[in-house]
Image (cartoon, rainbow, N blue to C red):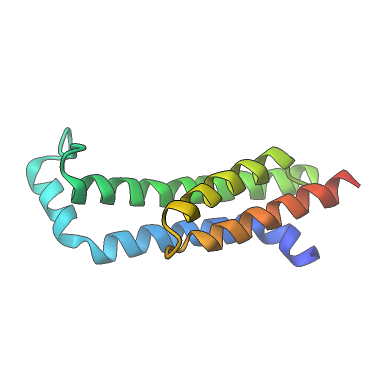
Length: 123
């Protein structure tokens, strides 16, 4: 638990980096179309490819931000709030229920680790 406690933030950052890099590396034609059309107002909810790319990429940045926040909070307090792990777990389980053949199980695991860090800090 000791290693995980101190590196759950880095795990989330890593997940976000993988998410974002994968998105950029595999969706170049979508990115090129967005760039060609001008960035402002170039993604609409009726264009499922662009809309999906936007949210997949945005999720990567949200994982990175969450990881940075978790890392900072652990460094300052030695623990995480249980609400952080609980909300991450709820969101990832919801996603896993809707798309079980996705990588969201990695986030379920990271959420469980965050909850364990919070429980360890509460002792």
